Image 1 (cartoon, rainbow, N blue to C red):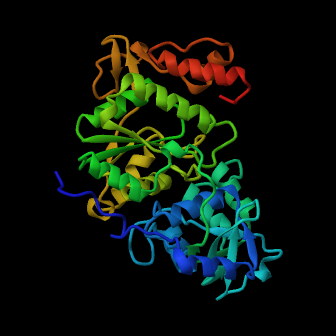
Image 2 (image 1 turned 90 degrees about the vertical axis):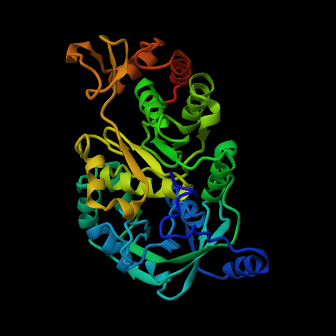
Length: 390
């Protein structure tokens, strides 16, 4: 067991915030700069860069790093990095953003948040980016669609935060990597497993998180609350579910809930690597990688997100993936299991599809206890009946 918390990716936790007189001067000067209004996805990326979630990035990627990431899943330094974090603008009107100049990055409400120094301005082949990062060029893929819609011209360079980030949703659970690291240290945790999710925790999730918790000091439940697909369960509903299941079914002194402000890209295997690096920056030593991690539709193989870790040496990522197969309720043993632990036949395994569960919820019916804890199901039923998509 290691003696100190795992080091951030690249060895240093990035903090892009200016402070004191320097911040005030930069904020005032920013009012004279060309402005670029950020999208919801941009805002999520800005927060993750500025607070160190995406360490060692100090800004939106430049052209050299962009191509190294797309083609080889590495930064130009050689450090593993799987998805380019880009700032895109439509080609029409892009002339006002000049190379080797500064621009002000603004919230949709007009507030200036950061200053970006443009060290790179380029127009890549987006179809190649789509194919290599998302394994498809189909615009039906939400990540590809979002990338195409953001604009053809890419602006890269370091940024400085000159204003407070927007009021965080779920402030009770909104923590920077510096804060989570301090909390893990305060609790005396040396080994921490992260659980990435954009769904409520059902019985299969509960099973794999508890199996993982048997071998480490703490569990960091870290649900993504940035931009997701319109038919995903809203974050406020999911947070209620997380609170309820932790209160009733987990040892509270060994679980820590904190939200992940990133936008969802649905990049499957590559996003699994990105999620692992972000959790390493939060201070986690392990991350759960289950069935179809960060997947969507049929674009990726069931366990491709596990296989991609084989493309890196363990010491390169440092954070260790904990691989789990699809869990189910075993009627023979009367408990949760996977094919690795259950002697049951397929007919003795309860797999409830998300489609079937959503249909039950819309009818006001509780899913069977083999799939979901009743307290969680009741929250989802209430959300469904209030027209929130489930």
